[in-house]
Image 1 (cartoon, helix red, strand yellow):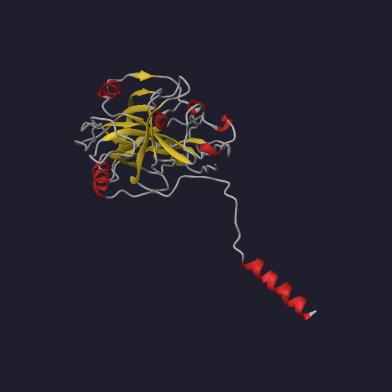
Image 2 (spheres, rainbow, N blue to C red):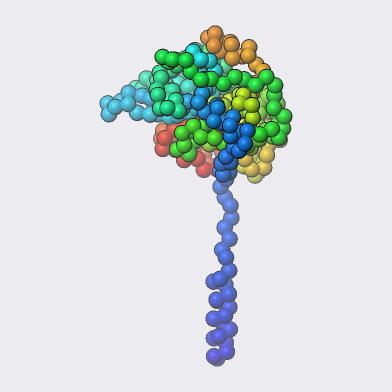
Length: 297
């Protein structure tokens, strides 16, 4: 009897010391990688020209911030390039007349006015009410190659204009629909809500793209019903990828936006709005950030 009791205690002790394992049921952005060497220098240069874009609304209780994104100066006169969905006001709350404000690295604030946009390319140009010459970044003269290191500057994770390093994995990702941009750039950078509209910078300190959206764990989905419509038919990575709209060597597009061109074609995706519910099965999210929202994938 004593022997049996000792055996039972030994078995139970062995079981209790066995580490528990848990099934992984949710995926999010991987840890942020910080830039080093030339890429760190490129980030420091580009950060001076990058801004946080706040969407604000006057209420009875005072001015409220509805959301935030990122943008960057492309001229000394205060032209700011960002993602169109960051400043699209088509579906804002009733009774609110939102306005946008650029917050510089020195915490100076400038009102923003929409100049031009291309909803198909998910790009928008704004004019900041600057009172001085602003630092700015230029588009790259040539496209990056797969494996090229790049750094994005953004405002996710309660950060303020911080770097997210990574590399280019694919160029020319083609959309499956007519209402989303072809030739999208795929990245490994760990981007999240709040980074949308920020610059993607190469080691020379040039802009190669504008942050647009991310895809969580698309390869784990059992059917195309969970894949964003504009990416159906595209071979996606198994776990996580970030995407940017390319702007390298395309001065004509930037010039057209600066001249006031407006191309009103809906962009497919989710806008981030306070109090909005999200589908846990969705594998794609836009990166404009709205307070009080949680994304589960």
